[in-house]
Image (cartoon, rainbow, N blue to C red):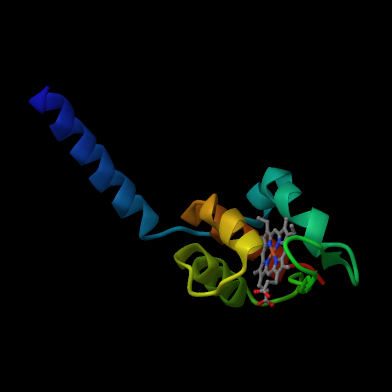
Length: 107
Ligand code: HEC
């Protein structure tokens, strides 16, 4: 059992080291991740109706840094929007980097 824990700890360390250099690849995001976002963010003038009516901001063309920072702020609860909090909470650091890369390349 102890061995298993040691292995898990090692795996955790390896994962942490990997996370330090997360590089966003727009193509990875385009494949599947944006499927979660286009419903709200790609409809001009669309207003999300739950739980209140929010104007959904355009994120295409924003800088990658801005998108990344916003998603992490939702994740940590620094920005309080129930919808985005839930969505950002389900993203990994790699997802965020990919999505930021994708949207920053949009016009
Ligand atoms: C159910 C609708 C909905 C979905 C789905 C959704 N968003 Fe959002 N998003 C919103 C709303 C509404 C806001 C504005 C919230 C606020 O006022 O803080 C927002 C805000 C944002 C912001 C901050 C924009 C700014 O200008 O500050 C980013 C970045 C963002 N969303 C990215 C994403 C990404 C990436 C996805 C997919 C993984 C996604 N959103 C999915 C509704 C949605």
